[in-house]
Image 1: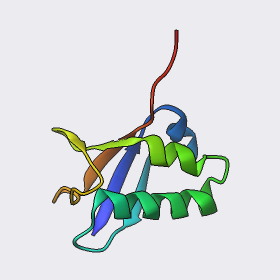
Image 2 (image 1 turned 180 degrees about the vertical axis):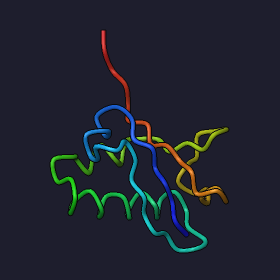
Image 3 (image 1 turned 90 degrees about the vertical axis):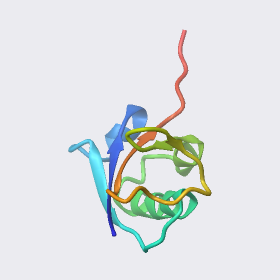
Length: 86
């Protein structure tokens, strides 16, 4: 299954297009996708911390998806890094 992950915050620096497309097995959980994304970034964007991916949330168009959830059927997700500021 082709998955398109829209990037936000510091993760946007991982790709100039603002998204990454990965091939994921079916079925695939968010935890498994998180591992695939970390592997992809390790190779293609080593300046992005694996810890940042671990602390980020994945979301569909409707909700935040926890690690045990499977990917949405349309394969469209966003990854939302933690936010801080003053």
